[in-house]
Image (cartoon, rainbow over all chains, first blue to last red; front, side, top):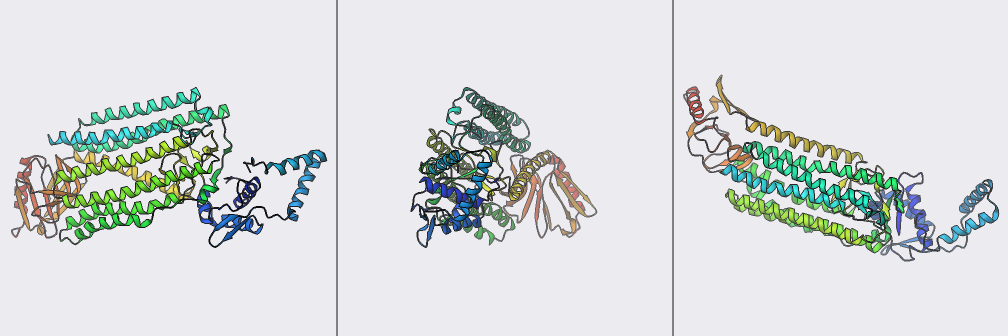
Length: 129
Length: 459
């Protein structure tokens, strides 16, 4: 999986790393059990501080997307499988829905857009994060 | 005769250097990782007639430039030997830098064409990392592998430092110290490559990992072989240092083998990059981060040293303050070398001047200037045969020997003379020996008499 970081973006680097890894896991580009680079190696490759990568990994670990073992290093855990989104994402989706309504989009069109976004990552062709 | 031979040897060494610079630069016109002359192009665009025309013209111009400098270089041989060597170093630096102006011109043309045609690839304007390739970096060389050549290089240095002769000690510090430094430099440069971003040419992680492996393996090989070759060369130099001919042969052999090996390695990496990305349609575009396709400028990247886009070399990140300082220092050193060469060239043709005033001997020739209180002179002599002398630091040309030399029978000697034009004046003080001559044998003999008369009776 290719990780693309936009250093000039307003989105923090750790967030970009986290988001793209989630997209990669959802798209199947990062398979469960797949080994991830160490914090030092990834920070070296990205040219960012180790703390930045550490923060991204900590977040992913907390969300259940990756696990870190003493011997095996950091690996992809796969889908956490909670069956529901955390409340903060539901809140974010409500804001997007509100913006869609204000933009004049009807409910069917918005539902179609959500369906498309949902299926986008399961096709394995989502590559631009 | 000796001057002609030296000029021929110098030309034989220098002309291939010009050709190598041209060959390396001309090779940039071949697509590697979808990069042509520092511009990332999709596969389809690489065979566009206008792109091919820009590449062709660039290659032709580079070789023409190389030819022009070679002709200029040969014309320089008509100068006096000292001036020829010094000016040829200045010319070599100019010959290395000038073709880069052609590169910048071609890069700008190609970038403008790319913009006009809207050629783009999926990943543009960002830093791209292959996670799978990064997770499997491969096994690096052990740092200890670099230790034996450093230890070997230290042996003659330490032995020479125990010598009673100051000239020998200084010679060892300059020559063998430089070799130890090269060994240490190789040891500390190697890990740099392991901290660099891996190559990413496309979505295929195996291919990206292969590109990274090729670069890292060859970088390590180049540094390891350099340190071992240097240690072997230094041992040979130490054993043969009494023979000027053998040390010259050894030095030439060392240079040819080292440059040949490094170039072979560099082209191996370039060929692998060409081969591995030949059918890659074009995926990653970092052109925005590279000024003229040549200088990496990314303030958000913590790396000071970065991989060159193609080949196995490394460059500096202009976006970091330390990178700017590094470049400024390198530029200052380069300017310093040019200024020093010009100053030396002018100094070579300046006259030898000596005088005695107020009980002090004053001598000057170019940058070599000193004064000796006559009261300190313990011995004064006029010799017609120069004893066997080995250069420690300074100039050793057929018509000018100047600087610190290890001279048989004299300790701690500095000389300044034309070896083919005796007699020579020897002035000894408790600390040092100075051997010099003036512009003509008559002038030297006359000054010797003046000096002899001016000496206090005790001398």
